[in-house]
Image 1 (cartoon, rainbow, N blue to C red):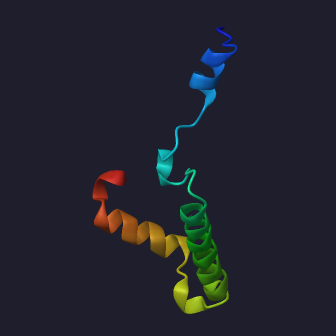
Image 2: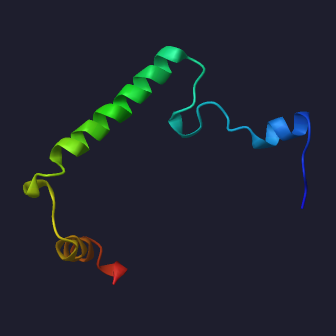
Length: 72
């Protein structure tokens, strides 16, 4: 096992800015991304009780296998 210390640890362990499209030093961009995540969560929560937005797991698998038969 290799243990990095000092500057090397900083280089190895640090997640680069922009990785996965989330990390940023710009506070405005960060706030915008957080607002988008919160809006998506609100949309999910609003529809969670709506049975028309959900299908059974059996129906999901049937549709998945129909679209991608090689998954069987």
